[in-house]
Structure formats: C-alpha cells, structure tokens
Length: 335
Image 1: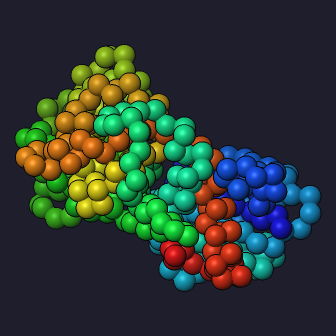
Image 2: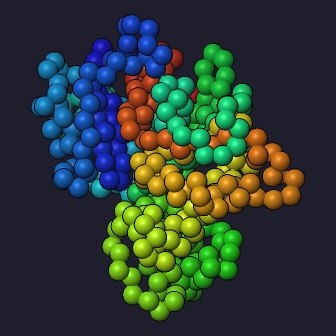
Image 3: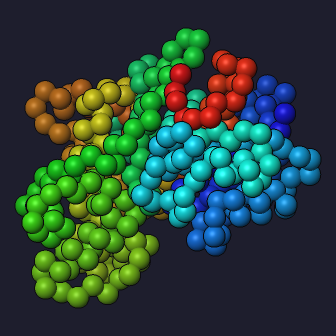
C-alpha cells in the first residue's frame, strides 16, 4: 500500500510518497517521490499536501502519516512554531483521506536511528562507536526538539519530549546578562528561546544591546556567516554562547537518559556550522563536572543532516504501529 509521509517543521515541509520495501533494504522503506517545500509559501498544510499529490501521486492514496513539530493531542498538533494549525480531521475531510496519523517530529527522527540517520553523521566528541544503551536525538531549528530511543526486543521504544520548553539555565555571567535582558522582570524563559535558529539571532541582538551597540545582522544565517568569517565580534560571541548553551542542555538530557547508544544532533542548521561547533565550548559544557564527567565522556555525539530522515522515521513509525494493531493509529503515542 502506498501512503503519504511528511515531516512538517516550522520552516520546511518534507513530503514523500512511500511504501514498504520488498527488496530487503535495511530501512524497510521505498520512497516513490519526495519533495521539500517552504512552509511560508502555502496558506495551509492542506494546500502543501495537495500540491504534492497533484504533482507526484498517480494513484489514489488513502493513508497519511505526519511528523510535526509539537505534540499530537487528539486531532490537533499543539505547538508554537508551526506556520499554521494542523488538524487531522480537517486534512481527512479536505483531502479525502481515510486516515491521518500524527506524531512528534523528533519522535520520527528517533525511529530513523536504526535506518540511515545513524550512518550519516559527523563525529563531534566522545567515543567513535555506539554503545548498547539508549540513544538521544536533539535538534535546534525553528524550535528545539528531542526524543529518546531505547533499543529492545522485539521492538524498540521511542519517547517524544518537549525538552525545548525546559527553563533556560545560564552558566556564565554573560549568559546571566542575556537572561536578564530577555526577562528583565524575571519569569519563564524556555531553552529554545536561545538554543534554536531564531534563538541565535536573539542572542546576537541581546549581546549588542547589552553593550549599547546596534545590531547590523538580520538573520541566523547572517550571524553564522559573519562568525565563520570572524567579521563581527558579536556574531562570534553569539555563536560561542549558542554552542555552549547547547552543550549544557544536551548534557542535562544525557544525565537523565545515559544515552551510551549515542547522541545525534540533527538538522541542517547545525550541519552548516559544524566547524564552529567543533571549535566551541560545546564538549566542555556537555561534560559538566565532578563524577558525572567520567560518565558523559563515554557518550558519543554526532552531527547529522535532518534531510529526509524525519520522513523515513515517520513511515517506519506508521508501519510499526500498523503491524502491532492492524490499523493505522490516529495519534503519536509510542509503543
């Protein structure tokens, strides 16, 4: 059976027509068509999927699985970073689909760990081979996502999180100044306000403002480009703070899960700044201190492109749940 699989983020939507592979390929998925769309180009998710269907689908499909930034609650995805509301009941009615299954986007990435995702990364720190324990997928993009993969027999377990909504904990005096700039009266500041693509730009603007300077860069890409060229001291500092904060955040998650199976920092954003990340304080902040340092030093960390992995993982999740229940699920509950 052919079905639609999508990975819908705050910036891009990856959509594919897939089916179960019959040739024994390791990931178990055969991709018949695949496209990447810019979410801002469409008034709704329905319009994006309809564009794909018209262009790529030659025979009617009745099933669809969508990995979305956020959490599926009933027919709706709850999230602050998507370009438009996502409701499975509306998609079913307007596209004539029998079933639309929803799950978290990083949950889908975790399902891709035993597929091509794990083999595609660049080693950042820690051991160069995976252990036998859990794995962790973390990714700053439009927001900040994370999910845990726990190997098991006959099936692995995957747990989605909203770790990006955890409180930001400053480490340095400069980070405390940034936090005060973001919340001068105190209050909640989520980690993704700083550790994300928009967060990098926020860091740059905050550091400029704290020192009484006017920011001259207007996009996260401009900040990373200026930092790589050593053309703007505040861009360089913003990248340094970003990478260090990402290290602390990832280390905190690692202390709760002990992912000796590896940590995969996913997304084109991090891949594009890999050299800056490798030279940063990420590893030092990831390792934390005292006795836990020896434990975290045994955790391997890679950086991998997001690419089509989310689509592949969503398709694997869908087929796994169909195999367990015989019917397509309607929400993103893990096994």
